[in-house]
Image (cartoon, rainbow, N blue to C red; front, side, top):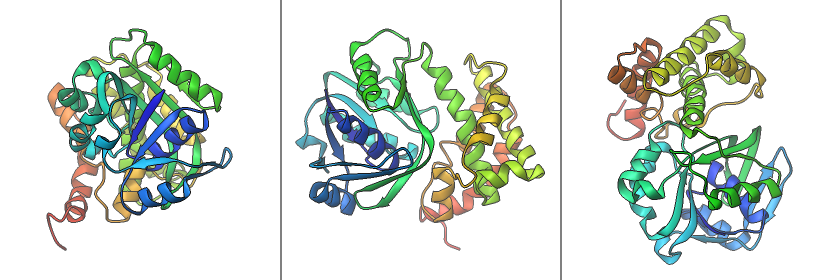
Length: 311
């Protein structure tokens, strides 16, 4: 298969790198020093599951130089998806499948509005990874896991081939019957741990061990799950406790990417995570006081990172 990775950071770089390791033709869409390093030295992946190096690695800044591909993995931040949808157009041909891997629950409809719903599947991933240096991806924790399928669940040999490629390199890839359930299950986890972690300015091990932040984390989890169920997503009754157990299992130093961005005064996914919980809750009549507090508390810093206020 011919696969483009639009956004080759911690997520796109890792999952795209694994496809290249599996023998697929992968083109990394990147920019700046990261692009130059991949073009010059290939892509290095430092992983708790074993390091690997893709060389040579094709990387481009202009999707127009790549043309239509079989699959596009979208690895940009959630707040960058509307702009990415326009930039992805040259990669999309009659038979292209676009798979978003963003946090949140809004990427698929945002991409579909620009590229057409018939081209955009649902998707998500779980991993703790980042760009450690130009051309270097560092996977620091959480077993890599990637999920994708069409919203209506119809079978597709392209997705089955993608799953098989990941299996060749030991990555757990799933094609679930209901992708919306999987997307919301992750949203329950990521919105809670990102928001509470960013407000508390502490890693997962501290959040779960301090009684007060653990209660806040639990309340945040229950709010997102309630919004999902009221929105018509068939989430299992045990989801909240399953999510807490998962948080108890991750490395104690784990921090979500949104939390790292806020700590580093960079634009973050606040609007797409905690802000989305508040908006969606208002739309379906579910109160979300914890997420409203998180959103309001972090919004001034988010506005500062985007140059909208100064202090």
